[in-house]
Amino acid sequence: MINSYTESMEENKRLFEKYIDLDSPEEALALLGACSCHGDIVERALSVDCDTTAEGMVIRGEDKRKVDAAVRVFERLHELCRDGTPVTEQLVRYLLDSALDNTLSEAELFTPDLICVNAKGKPVLSKTAGQKKYVDAIRNHELTFAIGPAGTGKTYLAVAMAVKAFRNHDVSRIILTRPAVEAGENLGFLPGDLQNKVDPYMRPLYDSLNDLMGFDTYHRHLERGEIEVSPLAYMRGRTLDDAFIILDEAQNSTREQMKMFLTRIGYNAKAVVTGDITQIDLPRSTRSGLSDAANLLKSVEGISSVELSERDVVRNPLVQRIIRAYEKADMQKNKNRREGYQR
Image (tube, rainbow, N blue to C red; front, side, top):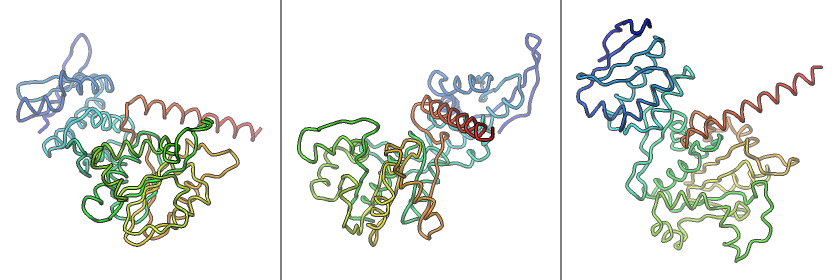
């Protein structure tokens, strides 16, 4: 329960206060975090003060709208905490970013969705509204395109859904593939056999499987052929039945490769195609197959296309700021180009 505003004068400043009633000191600790780490994040972002009282919390600030926003953030965190959702720094920052972008009403409807449990027993959750939409799309469609910037969980969530389907015996195998394209570098000759040569390109997929299944379990299924990780070129001529198939880094596939991959999907199969169209490593003259396929097939029954944004980034907050800086620079570049054409 939240009490009404009180106003006070402190050092000739008009302060607005709002109280949040909590049931116990443990709830205040869960919301504010150890050493008030979550409270500090809210204070810096909204220029408010967050303190505990005998009954709960008090939010103070000079700007009534920012006090309102802070209260709504903590109120939603309180609801999630009561439902058993752990309050993390990422969740606090997500709600805060939504408040700053005036999209808090949408974020307040978001509830983290349990996907599976990883090898260490930790729950794997969707952490933003965009991620939840992505997970729901995978559940409800045979083919899902996920387009978004780095750090939005495109690959990890797809692998988590694949592991869940495999554990539930919904599919009998997991097939992970990606184009073997160098990221703007010429690596030259790589030593070893064919598997040694392609392993560096597949490393992100190995890492996700190891985290979700554990090293021993993953390698046992790999030896049995129940899990396959291979370059996209190896998919030609195959029909993939009873499988969960993931094409990662699909922005580096050509239009022909994308068509080849999509026509591999067999009966009782689910496919997820992920990529970031702002990080294409193909030659400039080569058209990416990802955006082409997503646009071409968006109205086809059984296919869903989900676009994630910088608000869905769940890595270090610095990644969000980097992505926004690049987007701002690209927008300015396009604006200058348009103005140049008009002249």
